[in-house]
Length: 128
Image: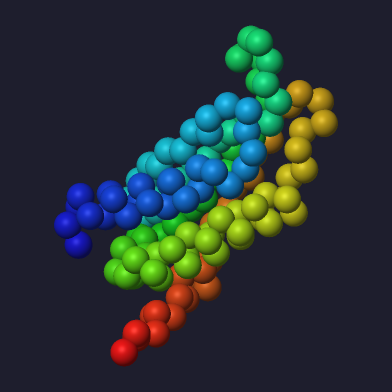
């Protein structure tokens, strides 16, 4: 796959994740590549203050393997949308299970490793 196409697919995942948690300020999504794994990090504000240094933030970092990203990139548009919905639901559920919102203006963070089952998206049925 061409590098620019792969970057576009990664950006699709980032955009899908950007809106999954309510935030009084715009969430931040970034990705970084560490060779064998790609990390996508989502950060959002749980509690906002006048002084942004006092904002209570949460962060979810998701690790993907290179074969997983390649599987995603090889999907058609309909399959990628199904994957994005699955991923968003899984991240929300995993965050809720592992980290409750901060009780005392603290930050919260969860690290997740994407599992291969998220990528098992059957092809869309033919419209013929």
